[in-house]
Amino acid sequence: MNVHRVLVCALVLGAPLSVAWGQSPVSAPGKRRAALDLANQLLAARQDPTALLPAGLVDPFNPPAIGATASGPAKTGDLARGGGSNHDLLQKLATFIKPSGVVQFGGPPMLLFHEKKLKVGDNLKITVEGVDYSVTISAIDQTSFKIRLNGEEVTRPIKPGKVP
Image (cartoon, rainbow, N blue to C red; front, side, top):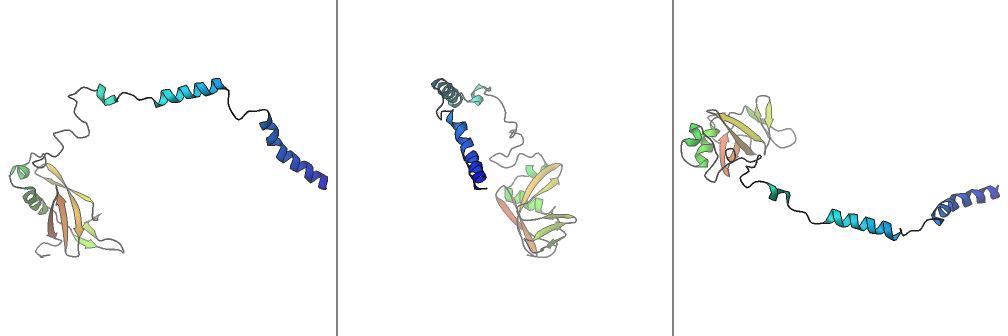
């Protein structure tokens, strides 16, 4: 019985040694040179692919007609053309936001718009005079909420007629 154990151990331990016996751990110089040449070719500095593009190309992800300018949002509606600051624009937009209530289920409070529930940090799309505006909900209390647009913030009551 012990002889069988010794033979099994010798076979298990000797098999990897016999396979490795005929192989050298260092590859041939020709193979190493080919691998090094390939690595140098793959790691070589390349020309910037954007340098090949024409100078007058418009960025498709931020075209000038859609992006905001330094003077404010690029909108064409009467609300945006009415003059005034971003704060005035946000005050006008806030009158169109009419939440139905606020709810809190063991987590952060959520502002209710019928079936829709929005939490702090969510964006709310408001369409006024055919122009879409996206305001961010920045805070929600039991009786009021704050919205933000272009760095300006406005506080509004949840139910009209109530002062926060």
